[in-house]
Length: 599
Image (cartoon, rainbow, N blue to C red; front, side):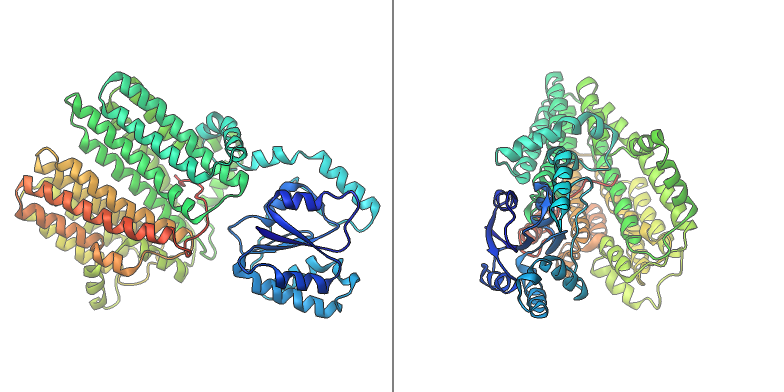
């Protein structure tokens, strides 16, 4: 139970206290500032506490937005301020100071909440102020103003506003026009029946896994059922976020579930398609693995570019100006959103093609679509990076270093490098080293020592690439080059093994490593830092794993190599999942709900 302290004399006819109780607050009334301070001190230490001016007039959803959002320690709207337990001390200090200044009189309490917010700002506290749009929040000073405020409240349907705000303001064409018009009502139904976003997220995962199982049957009926269930899973995937925004139910566990389940669903579906194709005598595991590699690398490009420019100074360019201009033209907005093949369009395409064609055609279309999207987005970001004069911060450099996932080999060699590489030589070294190991793996016969030589060169170039802070114009390309090199090497060597089970084992290893990389991204997004250094050391870093896989391919038979890949996949998965679960269910995890992939 949270506590709301209503300051001042109650206003006849006001629904304020009932609104606060409906939002889960235990309401207390303070006649003057001194009593408000006493009630604040008496409130349970582990509860959220709010100060609300008795004259407040506004929508119930305004109070919900201002006083119940769990993501913010301090939050305020006109006439109300709230603090979670972590910020109680700051609120108590501000109230004590303002009470002392006002002498604790009844007159002082009339403006206590607004004065407290001003004091919090003066103390340097970060106070969240939600965007209210057409919603009303006012503290009328006289009967006429109160009547006008009540008329303004009556003129706006706060439930309609609440439903509309449950949907992301920026979403893909398919999601906007084919899912959100009805999924928002499913979210409201879930809220009214006590369902949580985490439960809906889990239902979405289970639906996708059943879809993957249907695809694995290899029958036409199974493929049709898989396509239908995949769309149903996506509807639930949209609903969980809309429910979180509708009910303001954000949690640390929800952040982890939503951040990771999308990838688990999609990649499990790829595996189901590959199994179904195999039942029909068609081996498409290489295509499935290639699709996962391409999709993951696309996301790493997005994440790296965004982190590199998260707080860059002078972050402007002619390309960015042109992009903003195009966004002002109606039809180009949707074309630009569709060409990057976001999750809605991508899953719709996969579902339709699964039901109507074969897994091979589905993967071909997916690879072509993702390749076009990757070319478009990467080209635009290259132009922006080369034409803008941005000064990147230490935070951006740290984020890129964490995304690089360099292990002990690169760290050790990087320390002996005198000053690293200059300018564009950094991404060039990462590209050339990665290309060397992938090409050596793809063009040599199985068991050759050439991939090992390529991997040794890759270790050296990787160390040189991260020897200095990644603050160059194109240094954000370093992490995606590393991802492409590691995953591409695994794919090439497994394909060269030429035995049953090698490519599925490689798929499992790539999926386990990809989970680690996505986990790193979402921790950075939540301002929680990267995974601990010991974890990166234990799983070897990207260069260590790449070298290990090439050595295993050189010294083991194809069958033994398949077993080794399987063991390595299981080991990496167990370590990264155990640490990830520990972090995301701990008190230190960020209470956010992921807004979906940027692609």
